[in-house]
Image (tube, rainbow, N blue to C red; front, side, top):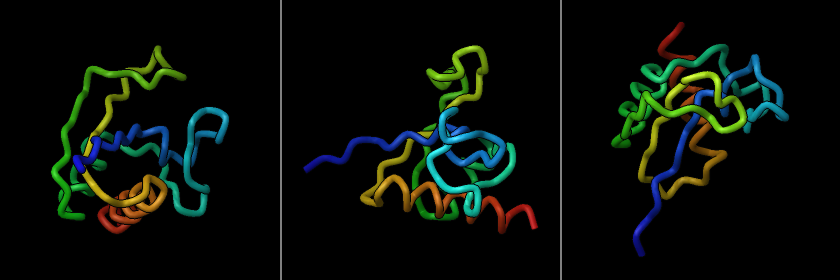
Length: 93
C-alpha cells in the first residue's frame, strides 16, 4: 500500500496560533513562528525526505504565503507534528 504525503503547514505547530486558526498540537508542544526552513531541517533530522513548496498558502490564512512541507511517513499526523516541533525546539536552544 502506497502512503500519501503528509502535509505540514507552519500554522499546525505555531504556538502563536489558536486551534481555530489551524494549530493542531497543544501549545505545550508547539513552537513560536516556525519557519519552512526549520520544519525542513527537523524533517531531515527525523530521517524523512521533505518536499518543500514555498509558493503555497494555508487555506485558512490564504493571504499569508507561508509555504508547506510534505513528507512520506507511516507516523500519525499528531505524532509527526510533535516530533517536528520537538526537533525545532532542540535546534533553537
